[in-house]
Length: 125
Image (cartoon, rainbow, N blue to C red):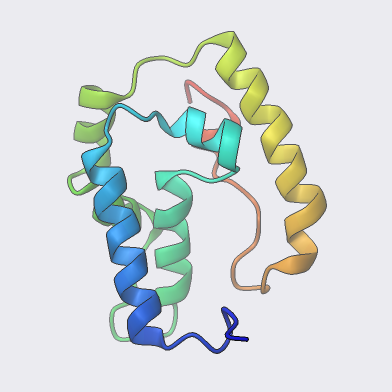
């Protein structure tokens, strides 16, 4: 059986690009809802890109990674597509993030912690 660890990097990269393009197209899906239901969002993907770039010639910070995922500067994306979170969305996200911290910290590599940036764990910041 093939596993994530044995998956060819070119195949994984193409699947990742397809995921990012899908999220760029589906601007109706809010980051907070992604966090609430899946435990990750566009911001997380941007952070993971930045983490993966560490020590490479293409090293970047979290903001640059996030801009790649959004397909535009994050401030522009947020102004166009991110209304303020509702109390229900914030509560769902908080519950979901707790699952990440409990289950994923052990499962993920040290270079990809299951921690989320303050912008996600503190909506409105």
